[in-house]
Image 1 (cartoon, rainbow, N blue to C red):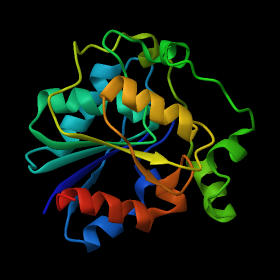
Image 2 (cartoon, one colour; image 1 turned 90 degrees about the horizontal axis):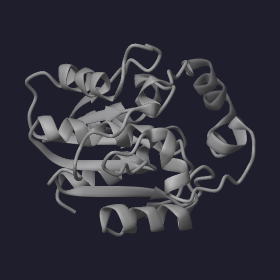
Image 3 (cartoon, helix red, strand yellow; image 1 turned 60 degrees about the vertical axis):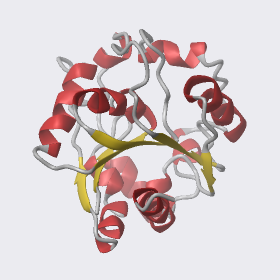
Length: 214
């Protein structure tokens, strides 16, 4: 079976994956939910990748899964370690030399408006959404101004899970960015931006299918 390495998005931590992790373990996989130094103003993208590599240790058969802003970190890990598959879940797809703060303008992003709850947690059970907001962390701006350091996307098979009900990265926008930047067609699933909270079983089933080669 595979080792799933789960990378959270901005201002988030391992708790984000706490419902997906047991689902993957029940399917026979090892799981590492990574704690990034998102609240450390001395940490940039390289330090984020360091944290993932350290958490992986000597594990093998790696499938690296990144949520949202985690898309800037996951390829850096694949550039350092043997990775079987990269999976972006409602992820940002960086371009060479692109600072994360420029990603929005460079991709032609247009906000649909709405407050934090409506944007991220509209399809998450209310008690779970409240817990998610309590678990939110400070996100340092340090990595946002750093150019993404790779010259190209790693030569690693990559899948993209597009969430059809995502109010942050709308489906039409995400399809275009994935096509332009990765040259692939995303795999679509019902659910909003925080699908690991709203539909953990469905997400785990999709990830398990990837591990099994489908």
